[in-house]
Length: 637
Image (cartoon, rainbow, N blue to C red; front, side, top):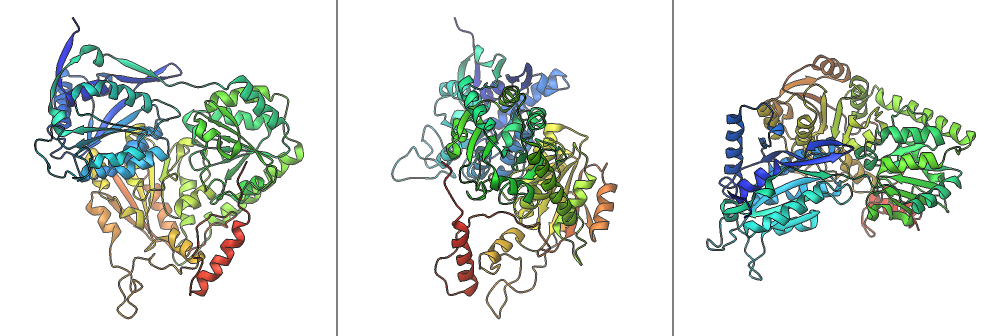
């Protein structure tokens, strides 16, 4: 007779998650290491009760480490979207080998997670989402916060998760949970087809008891593979690379997640092929490596973009080729350019009509380096790479030490941070003009140092992400989130979460009274920065172009539990940053910057459509420029 254990569905989930492990390269780790959440009527008596029971059992065990004993720590956050961001940053920091779950109540608690789910899936980062749902029995119908549809009774707000999840299921009977959990773990540990995993849990089913097979709760190891290159595909790639005169590597996040940075550096050293990077791939090759040429694309360095324009073979490793990477299909300008793409996901490997190598980045780089033994680019190309990078480093120094005033340019703040942060400290950023400046300028020595989310470019990511990173790496290394005033106002309440958890975090809050990035984009496209500044309504014009809104973000940050230091200029910022290196708790360094301060010189284009007909001369001029720029666009076939 099969041994069974009688538990509620929620209790079964918590017990199951505590026994799941990932393994790669012989190292086993707890797969799901904790849960973020907010309790409401939809989950407080289901998942909430199960977590409480689990917590009490851990306390009674006398053990010191919950992860070693199969228990699941719970972290209360202030906004459900924040919970997903924190879980995403945690999994990214763990190179997708460990994840966290997020539980929410029905209705707005559930839908608050959708933006976070889209971010995780877009970035190919695994997170486990457990939103509550309406009653499966439909007896209390409509239940509080239930969305009713006259068309069908089986539609719920959780259906919104379907397009932004890699795996979605709704559990209407306890026994349905068994195959659902297995598939959830499959996707969470898939190096290619991963992202948000959503299991919607009707609130009555969460509390329903069932006799579960005891085998469901045994220790289970999920093996994260390293797909090796298929020999014929590798041979085709090698043939194309050997024929190249001006090859260029574009390193993406796949290099970092595969822990293949040493192999990329060895490949670049052996072959002399220069390496440009995306946001997710920055630091995969150290900035001062002779083959490193900086970020590529719309916000890239002039050095990388000059090489991209003349590259005859582009070797994409672990990149999904966003429009910023390709400068909206304009930066790879050689008429006969060919692509060799290495990726665990065939969908990405196929892009731009490439010769595909579906493989793990580490395994592919090892095989390529061996297969190309004795081959390298010519000496003139190597020297050109070195010269272009040296020119760009001089430009970077100029941006870092612009001596702009009276308010500093934000690039000066970045320069101070780049020079003061240690190689194993972590920089966190996501949205606005900052990611562009950082990709263009930041000198990353290690991939661990640079944590910028730019696939979904989600305002509000930075503060909760810093929480997830701290939980991933533990105490010691400094975590610095750079937050603009626009993104700060999205999710500032998570400072209180960090304070409650006793986390040591540093945030640099730049105040420029508006959207610097969109303001500059608006101006360059003829829309005159309309609606991009935080100003009062002007009675004379009817526009929001009056005096600055008299809010005090520094005081706001202090109200959430942070220690705030107001910095008067760059010298004061440098001094305060250095003096707070060993500070405990949450530290916020508040700096006012000039939104019109000099930006790094642009060297590529980005396609943002401009109105084709308009009464404004500024827009007509911008449209003429847009038409001219689009002439460089092409399909890479």
